[in-house]
Length: 234
View 1: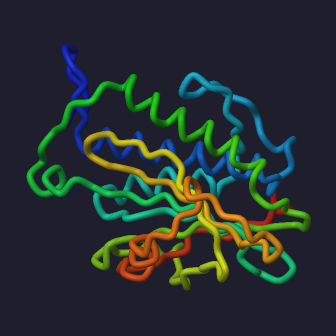
View 2: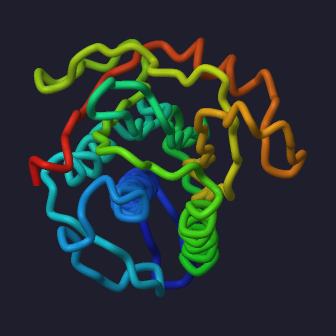
C-alpha cells in the first residue's frame, strides 16, 4: 500500500508507523546524548527534521525502530527509563504514549496531513527535549537505561523481549511536552523524574497532576522490556 500520492499527502498505517518508529530512534538518541548516559564522542551529528541530531550506532537504540515498525497498531507506548547503575533506582522516565486511530487499523482508512506539518510538530518536541534538560536534576552518577514497550495483550513478543515491572518513580514530578499527530498515530511525550524533597515550588504549566496518566500506566495490558544497556558497553 502506498503511503503518499503525487497530488496530496495521504498517510496510511505503514507510512505512519515508519514516521513514528523513526522519531523514537532519534528521540532516544537525543535523550541519551543530552543526559550523558553515553559519552558525547559515541555520537555522530546528522541532519534530520531540518535540525542537527545526535546519532549513535548502538544496536539496542536501533532496535527501537525495528520493534515499533513491526508492531504498528499494537504498540501503545515506549518508555525510556534511566536508572542508577549502582543501585538500579529509577531516576527518569521518558514516556511516549501512542494513540492509534481505530478506523485506520480496523478499516484501512487513510488520512491526510502534510509532511511539513508533521515535521514541524516533531521539531517542536526535539527542541523541548533539548531545552527541558537544563531544568532536570543533574545525573551525577553513572547511569544505564531500559527500553520498555507497552503492547496489546495479543502481541507475540519476540524471544529477545522479557516481561518487566513498570519501573515507576515514587515522589515523582512530570512535565508534558508537545505532541505530534500523523492522523494515524498520535504521540504524547511526558518526562517524569524524582522530585527534589527540598523543592516545595510547583508550576501549573509543567507539573502534571492528572490521574489519567497514572491510570494509563496501570491499565496497559502488557509491559515488555526491550533493552538494558550500560554506557560502558558501547
